[in-house]
Image (tube, rainbow, N blue to C red):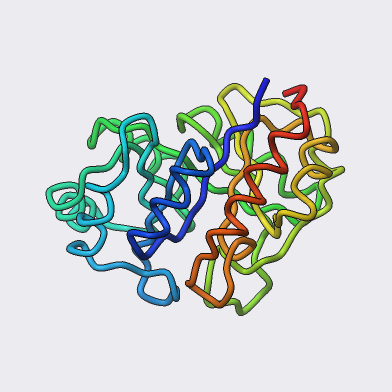
Length: 217
């Protein structure tokens, strides 16, 4: 079974082309002003319209209110909402029901005490994103280039599909898949030449690395 790849934080048409050419399954657009990958609705719409059929368009939001999500979806053609803040399970369930789109909930992990939350969110989300918990005081909830101890989730499964994130690079993604059994992986800073600037060769190398390892997930 091939590993599905999500490239998050795109900002240019050439990034979309690189993801298409490499064989990514998902592309992600960030809507969080503190992030170097933050997009206006206009820019995101233009990029989304360049994404070919068969690649899912994901919007990363952080503690977004309904009004913001309504405006976003009115402007940008999207397939999945990724919630990357402190949204509660009830909030996740509301967004999923109200906006009628699949919802992916990011859950930060640093040690075993963080794992029960994954079960809670798996009950209300369509997918869960198992990410490295940001350090205390960090301004970004993700995209920090940090990994967690992948052995914490080795062999674990949840009621919905899940995706591994946090500190992944073309050099370590194969090991991460082997250790965790992840069938899906997400990368942002690991395929950049500078914060918010995607590198086409790194995107190609990352996807190629996933194709060289078979997931048992």
